[in-house]
Length: 147
Image (cartoon, rainbow, N blue to C red; front, side, top):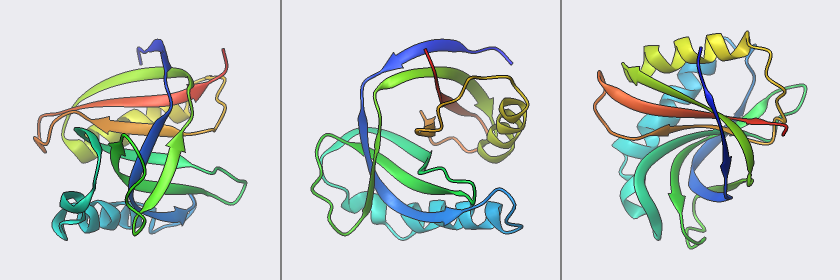
């Protein structure tokens, strides 16, 4: 799977989150429920200081037991105290561009990424959804790597 190396500034993301593990048989359901909660319950419309219209799926706070997943949007400053917030640290990332069905294209990309020999930092990996066309989505996946 092809990718490019990019350097990103830090990003602040707010939304809804949960702590999960790849071993959890309900992992997909938990993540799907976060997306539904954020968008279908209208939480996305309450976010102040949105930096853009892109949705973000952020994976952070990695431990041996699991990691935190946050579904949300980037903001220019924190003014959303009722939502979960995380910072995507500035750094070097492997950027993967994916096009297709939001669920299957992203799942297939992650399966390939997990099998790649990337020198990951596990400081924060994220999916950036550039449009909201479910079957023809443009998505960038950013994997934090060492320089």
